[in-house]
Image (cartoon, rainbow, N blue to C red; front, side, top):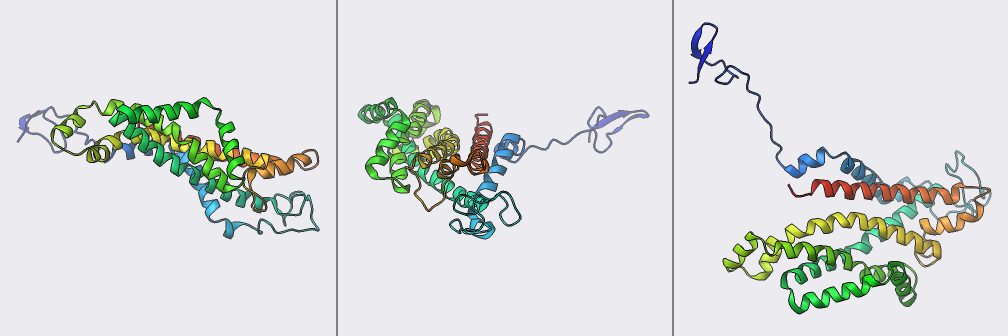
Length: 303
């Protein structure tokens, strides 16, 4: 029992105090450093909230959309804001709010699906090239250098012209071009990780290369690729909107923010909302994913 020298002489220390009589405050350590950082990251919370809201709107589009995206009200063409059409109608009498919701569903789906293959393939090639080195590293990095030497949009537009406009052309173009950024980033991290002590110990212990890559190298190199993935979704969505504006993206009658901006620019002086509202939707989407990426970078940074 701890001896405590109090006002009336030595004796046992009161409960909840230390040997010197000072109160002991119990420290609560977070169960997970990542969870603690996530709860205390306003950037991540705001970004995740905006992104989750956009995804929910896209998923629930058939339920929350007032009208079908191709429904025409020929008695209300280019109407302003009203109780029947909250955001008005376009030049064909289609409800603007419904088309915004369905266009968001389309662009988010294309933007997210278009980065899955580049993320997986680029991460795998960057990890293998950085870990194995030799001829594999040379071939991969020369391919990366060749693709990076050309402007991004020039390559994408050229591939879409070859494959054809529409979602298929978008998927093929981004699969062929977008993986180089992941490969380059992951390779640089892998070059550092492969020289670490725990990888050397795993080699000494006789573990096969595939197990070392899967259990020791990849978990320590994929973080940077995951952070870039959220920002890459923004870049792809902006590219999809740009292609839609040029008529090379999602084809009518499927609604698309880029096509809506292109169609609405002719009526800027009479009905500004047709072109402005899709642009605001793109801005909010980019803001949400960008904040989410910055928050993940802060949460997943090395301790």
